[in-house]
Image 1 (cartoon, rainbow, N blue to C red):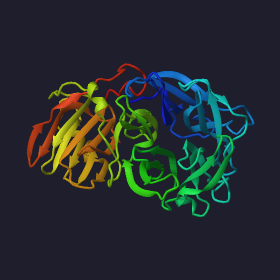
Image 2: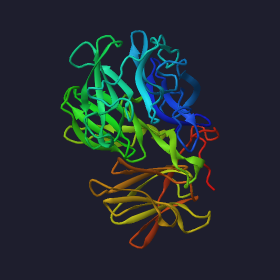
Image 3: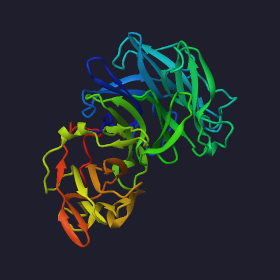
Image 4: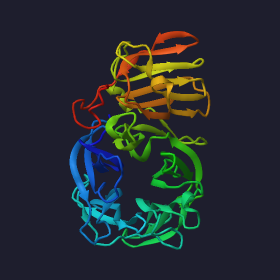
Length: 446
């Protein structure tokens, strides 16, 4: 349902699908630490496989840092593997070291594999294939040149790469942009001015390009300051690009798009955990969340919806307490739904979802607001998912809110509206590996 390898955190990732239908995820992995250390963390890619995008099985490490003196000697960051010939090509971020000010020096390298399962990588030489062009992009201190994503050019027989970069013409605090480069052979690249430079973003990370059924393009980008991701659309790769706004709420990050087993498009993303698995712990790199349906309709902004592929993992609705469950409620006025209480037989909410139609929030103990949002339109229905510490809320089938809560005890879901209380039936979630020591082994409560 969610995934992280035993004892490690998951950060940015890539998705593959082999000819037999098996999915593989390559992901950055690092130890649990309160502080992120550029020199010690994320020096390898983990790999896991699945047949349904829900039940992930760890397959160990698939790629690591380069030899001393090379451009990727300190760390390897976000990657993009894709089919090429009979095997695969993979562009990836290499970190050679730090600037005098402690900023990671980044460039993009290339690796190949004769296989299609995400293993067997060999580097293409010892140098990067694409570096930041100082004419348009910041280099050195506060630079960005990472998270490559490559697609076929829609105006030639070549290739287009998008990269997370920093626009040299803007102050660094608002210089986050999507750079782009073109190539005819994947080895020699021409860098161009920014493809998208909003002017109000500090970092525009993990760009993803997806060609839609009508031939137009969708760009997803993660926003560093908000810790969510947004979308842009364009008739061609060269634009013009129209900003469509947030696609995922704060707490969802680094999205990837892939075809589900039924052929529909889904988005997977990361979600954080908290150091020490406590409410007082700082947010840190965490885990892979379950898929959402990607809905793109003409004339409307893209949105993420509940993915029906999760339904086989849900049990029959019950009024009993369930630590991991999904429940639905119709809204006719202000309502608060209690999901957990302070003690096993207590009446005080320790985790609750509230909505007054357009304002939506999640509260912890003593009513402390953990997350909140203003809906684009008043909601008529809510769907709530909770798996251990992880909570998601869908309003009228749109994914709009998520948070973490490590407090409280499972309780029957109870809704209070206009002074009246009623029990909300919830469907228990069957976990793929309830006893495994990773994100599938859910925090059991106090």
